[in-house]
Image (cartoon, rainbow, N blue to C red; front, side, top):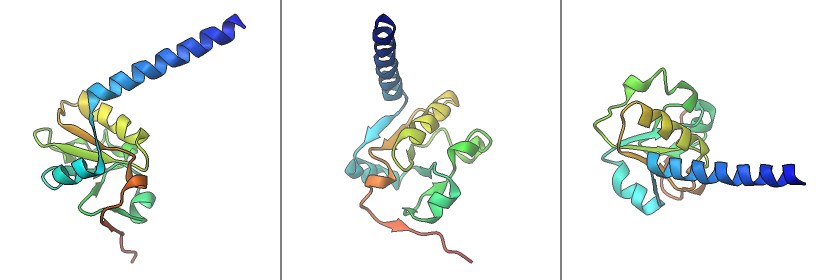
Length: 126
């Protein structure tokens, strides 16, 4: 029983630590806040290409989280970065990678693409 209590406490501490760490890394924006700023920023979809092809926010570039480190030079640290994924978990990982590479103005879409109700585009198949 004591081991179970210790594990639960450790899990709670981990989630609290992760929450505050993520909060320091990026700003979480509602859809309305996201819409107001993303046209003047680098809009990045960090989902995998197959997900991107099925629909993405108009104007977004696809830079999958799995390729972000290798393609960091495709982004400018002096411009705001607006990122999203399907939910938000990959967005937070991307934000941490960007923060480690001297990006400061990092913004994440609350709820991710799954909650997006704005305009979307689709990748054309050839």
